[in-house]
Amino acid sequence: MYLQSLKTLDRIKELAKANNQVTFLLQVLFFEKTIESLHITRSMQDRADQLAGETDAVNEQLRMIGRLSNLSLELYSWYIRNGVARNEKDEEAVREFFEKQLPTDISGCQGFYEKLYLYQSFSGMRISGRTF
Image (tube, one colour):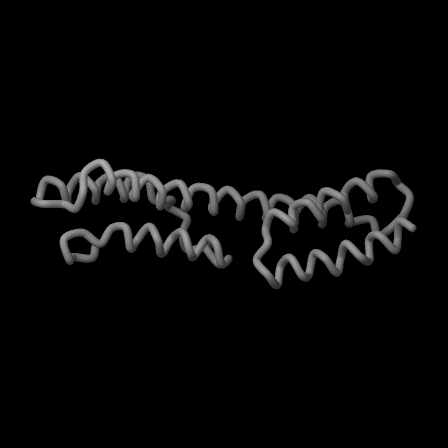
């Protein structure tokens, strides 16, 4: 049953990747690690390293999604508190906030939700008809 479960989890993993469901992907990896850690499958030797690497990559992707969604939400909150920028001082304040909060490693944003929140953050920077 364990090998059949791993095959099913592999199919679910591919579906999760294809549909940008990062949290489901993390859950599948958890189940795979649980099965492999029982030493029942006696699969290939580098399976532990492979699963650890996949988990690290998914965790990094989730971390980036969290940071970018926070930035998008904080920019929206700034807009609610202050309204549109009415002068240079307001524009400079929101620009400074944006640049301070924007992750430096956004070049690796490949997933759907990473791009969504990144684009939302940039559109939140559209102030007084100007784009930064």
